[in-house]
Image (cartoon, rainbow, N blue to C red):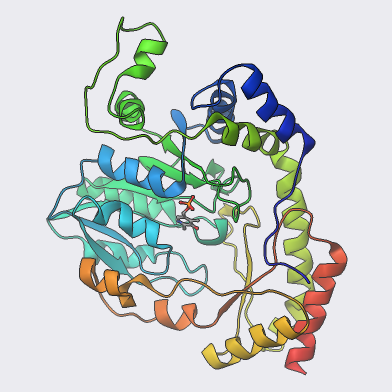
Length: 375
Ligand SMILES: *Cc1c(COP(=O)(O)O)cnc(C)c1O
């Protein structure tokens, strides 16, 4: 059986967890959390990185920090995970969905400006498959209209746009370290605070609305409740599990890219014959092989392909029923403009097995199975 996703184990993870216990520090913000934060800061250039309990809560923190209120509007693609929308909906905002580009499945930057109203507060681009959105255009639009930008970079750790790390370009960036992502702490994430103005408030919001971070640095002599907040910091044990992966991030990235390239080269002849479509990587983007997907003719052909692969003991999946078509999406959002690609592309897309350590022979088996399907 070739699984869709698989966790990998490094001995150092257990040693680190033991060390956290020996240090008598298993709750949050010990030395492992600090080392993960420092790694993110060094590797992305963000002002401040803070580990969180998930990318969902990192997005929630960003929405809280931006003081999103009932009546506000936030622009995002409909082709994304529910958390991108939930974070703002939980603060009372209405979501304005705009169409995606059919080449990258990212928000179509050319459609954003038309969706802006006097209620718009933020834009939340999602870097699908770890391939960057057209960020220069998005940032220009945001600055021209006084909007904030929250990058959902859940899938984008170790990816870049014009040499800048995804997550470090907008006002906030949000990473995921869920087990299905490139680097995992089981459940976890990080918020990247790119605007120095928000750093102190971000630390407060993440620490239950208290100035505990300042207290621990000796900047105040007691800590107290100063703002709205919650507990967004993960356990030290999760950070201890994550750190060894960040330390070899380059190796993990290269391993995934090698599998990605093997899929691409193996399936290219089928693309050249017009049987399927393969991912497109814009020149400005360097990606992290978060996902390998292909697109077939329509939903009927996709269902048949997934079934065919399953019969060959290969788990392939699809995802993202467009949010605007979901019950909550209709309740809390609206689609601006025409849904030319969101629904159509979402019904054609298939994700192939992809994880660190995926065997070369397994990639070949998947490719062979796809060839036999099209025969
Ligand atoms: C995985 C993912 C999330 C949620 O990440 P969690 O860490 O599980 O909360 C949000 N947005 C996108 C685009 C994702 O892929």
